[in-house]
Image 1 (cartoon, rainbow, N blue to C red):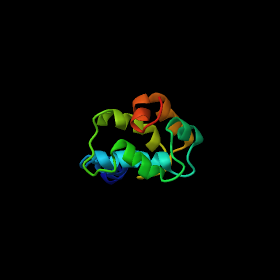
Image 2: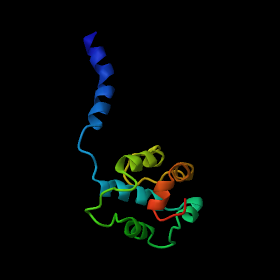
Image 3: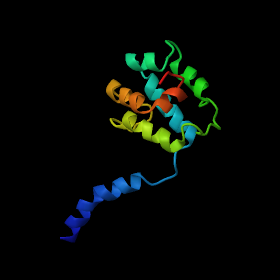
Length: 123
């Protein structure tokens, strides 16, 4: 009977262990969001709202935001705010750089005007 109980708890324990570890550096979080925003095919509404370039989107946004610098740290928006705004972008996949649906990207843009400004767009 105990064996069955332990087996039932195993997925919960694995999940909890997966959430343990050091926080990702600010620069990596910033770059992940930029990679998701620029993933092809780029969402047309995001391209307009964020004034995304047709070429070298990732490099352009990293330059605009300062995320090209490995020493980058959040100031405005704060790290906590940036992570809140990032939530819809990781809803479908937590894999680094995974493309979010345009619906989820639009949600981040709609609910986070400070993220839009940070990325060089017009809120």
